[in-house]
View 1 (cartoon, rainbow, N blue to C red):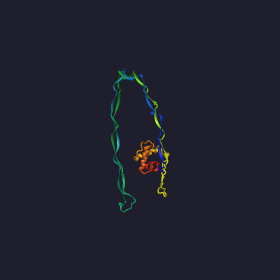
View 2 (view 1 turned 135 degrees about the vertical axis):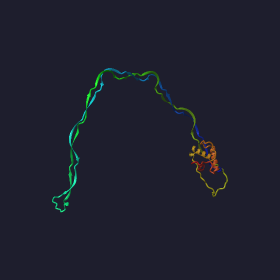
View 3 (view 1 turned 45 degrees about the vertical axis):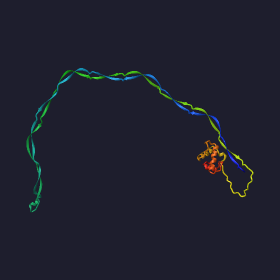
View 4 (view 1 turned 135 degrees about the horizontal axis):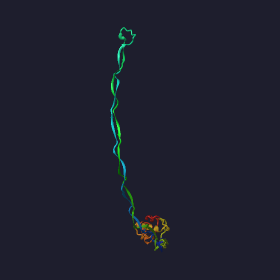
Amino acid sequence: MVKQATQRIEIVPATFEEIEERVEVKAASTRIEVIPAVFESQEEKVEVKAASIRLEPVAARYEQIEEEVEIRPSEVKLEEVPAEYETVTEQIQVAPATTKWVRRKGDKNCLSANPEDCMVWCLVEVPAEYETVTKTVLKTPPTTKETVIPAEYKTVKKTVMVEGPTTKEIEVPAEYVTIKKTIMVKPPETRVIELPAEYKTIKRRLMTAPAQTKVVEVPSEFKTVTNRRLVTPGGYSDWREVLCQNKIDEVKIQEIQTALRRKGYDPGPSDNIFGTKTKTALIQFQKDNGLPVGQLDFGTLKALGVSY
């Protein structure tokens, strides 16, 4: 075998279709429209001078009458009446009643040889002393006698006020004037008008099938040569796990392109397509890191930091 059987990854480009789509270019909205107020002219009676009251004086009223007038008031004449006296006899006390101590024989049957032993002191009442005197006393005190002299009157004529001066209230009516004025009969209003959305038909490309990769088996090439047969093997075989074809989708390709760019390699545009530039960058990364070349094995994905 001069060339080992391998696999070739071929890129199946994505397919696109041009479609027409109706898109909203202006959203539906509302417009507020103002309806002005409605006014009209009216005549109105306006008071220019309020009603009031005027006071008018009313003169006093007099009349003539006859009246008795006192020309000399009544008086009282006083006449003195002298006092009357009489002579009376009266006993006047010249010494009041008193008591005094008198030494006398107390017991008639006293048989003491000493007469002094039979003597006792007794308290004796001394009656009051009177003297008869004659004197003149007031019988009737002096008085005055009142004599009433009546008043003197005469009839006179005089003018008297029978009704005092007053004021009379006179009502003064209010004064009015007619004016024209503009009044609002209907207030302003607002009306909400619905504005429909605006649409536009545009053309755009729609991907109908994503880009894919397919693995093409490349058969081994053989050539008949003369060689030595290995009697005792001196090497070893190594199996590598690779990413299944159904897992190589647009998301995974984008992760690989991003990881290669982060590592300093140029995988081309981020188009989610496993194209020539992406494959070249991947092979160079594998060579630089001593990894198996040409396959998306787990070791390569791990070195790139891509999940598998």
